[in-house]
Image: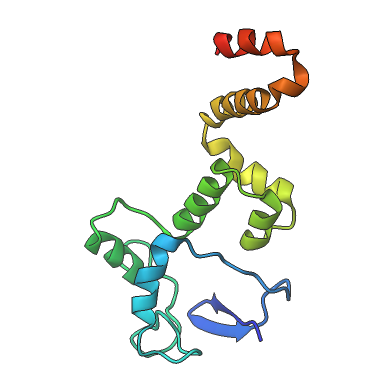
Length: 157
């Protein structure tokens, strides 16, 4: 059973996700070691990051809450939980992930919404298009050019 924890005012409500669909959130390898350490000694259904009362953490208070204290302790610049979501999605778009998969991970209604929200953040991605086209052309040049044209094309690179 998939459950979602949503805070309304100061109360956390546990229930089905709003779309009633399962959502997977992939975990990058660089996070797994620390996350595994955090899970040591816990049961499968325990919260990974419980509040002081052992229940779900409440949303952090913007400038004085638990999240801001953790950011300060880690000596990081000011960042919010939503900034982390935005960063993960933006890096995924920049890395060329499958937009439909990213849409599902973020819970967006459409891939267009995902791209409209996150694809404009990396201006140098336009340069990557040219580089990708160069690689594709060189990889397929034997199909497109006669053998003597291959040397000219390679020399131009």
